Image (cartoon, rainbow, N blue to C red; front, side, top):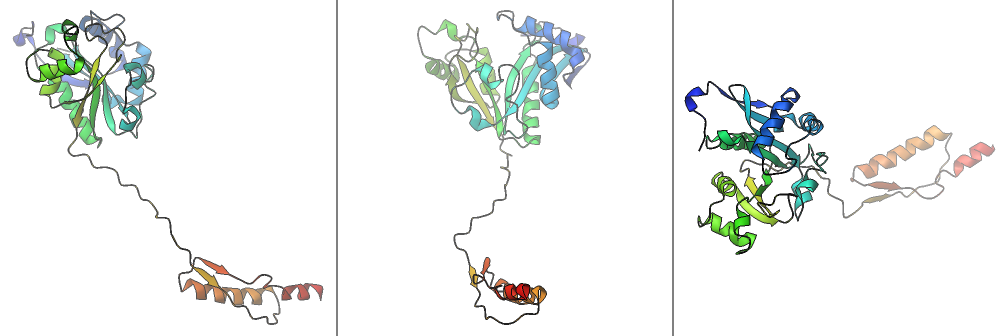
Length: 281
């Protein structure tokens, strides 16, 4: 539950993250991930995210103080269809994997300061992501979710068994329980996903949410023709006064075969031989 007196909250706003908020963001991350080493994004990384995809980076502010944050990129789903790590999906933390033409909103960060947990702030961040996903016509949301209670059961069961017990409410995992309650479904287990995440034994769960309003973009394609129609010209040799008169005759035959929707007009070899005589004379 939250340690905050709700009566002292004057306003709660969701805003786009701005670079001027970096120092406050940094301290909020350190508070949120006190058990993870080196747990905050550098200023240059945040700047890159904002420049690449500003609408994917949002914060919640209580009384003008950052208390929660969600960071996202857009990727192509098929590029990450197998096993991968957090480092790989973020492009070695440089976000080179962000693709404006991608089809999935990939969550790379969600955190809430400890004293503000239990106030449904996480749900508000995820509702924003879902709305963004629909507005951008993306097929869904995906991310690697931590399972921070798994280390207490790792000697007794596999991650798959653990996930099933959490789903059946036999084991409580605050992070996974939250994701499942927000309409996310488990797609697969990711091994060695987040380096240093001892609580999850470096496992993660690929969680996905499907956008039911997604419409696959229609790309116009030109079908390859399986047959080619040739117009074969039977050319009768006749005298011509010059090149212009010859081309009038050529144009007549081209128009004739075009009326039959021919792809090519094939003239006899050396059909212009008589012009040589004009040149010689």
